Length: 83
Image 1 (cartoon, helix red, strand yellow):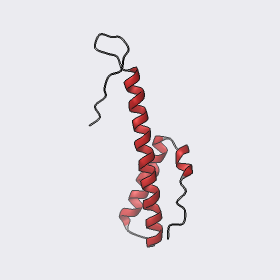
Image 2 (tube, one colour; image 1 turned 135 degrees about the horizontal axis):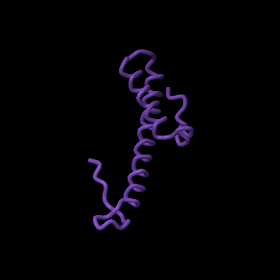
Image 3 (cartoon, helix red, strand yellow; image 1 turned 90 degrees about the vertical axis):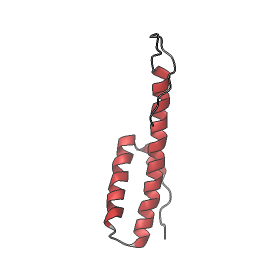
Image 4 (tube, one colour; image 1 turned 180 degrees about the vertical axis):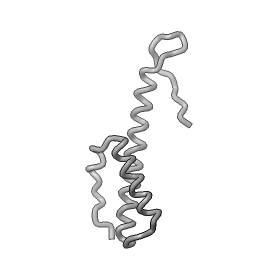
């Protein structure tokens, strides 16, 4: 079944690269073509790519919070509401 569950290469991808690959996997899976084993491997990689993208977004949010200006103009941490 799942042949390659080692996704160490994903850690080297930028957010944009990972997101592009994830979009391609989703499109491929939506077409429903190909073997079941391949679809399972693709789904597994897609899940790993999603986790990577989530991590990158959390890291960016933390950086923004550190450099956000407070109401009085001084540099301080301000919560970022992304929901």
